[in-house]
Length: 140
Image 1: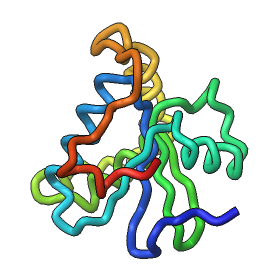
Image 2 (image 1 turned 60 degrees about the vertical axis):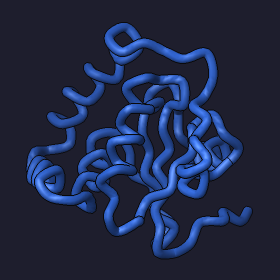
Image 3 (image 1 turned 60 degrees about the horizontal axis):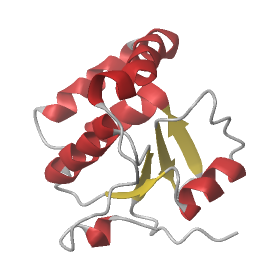
């Protein structure tokens, strides 16, 4: 199986029908000055391929995954979110300081928000379709 992701990029997999997740993707795009991230919905073919490759239980992890093709590593939940913000512009990157908090504490907060995200922020019927300007940032 070959994933077509350049070695200098990382792929953010997100819940394509979640309004909070879609807003977060747009937030990252605006602050990704290093042009480091590509995006794909979890529901996409590449999303399903990565989920299968890393044996992810989508009942337990269904919101955000960060795939780094070099060294072929997948992170998820709060660790993924904080590794993403670490590479964004100031002052957003300061939130990476929370990586010092143990993952079980961070993930408790993360899981609480993820569990209620549809209730609080709503849900779309279909995955977001990127504008022509943003199309190059998304993988199918």
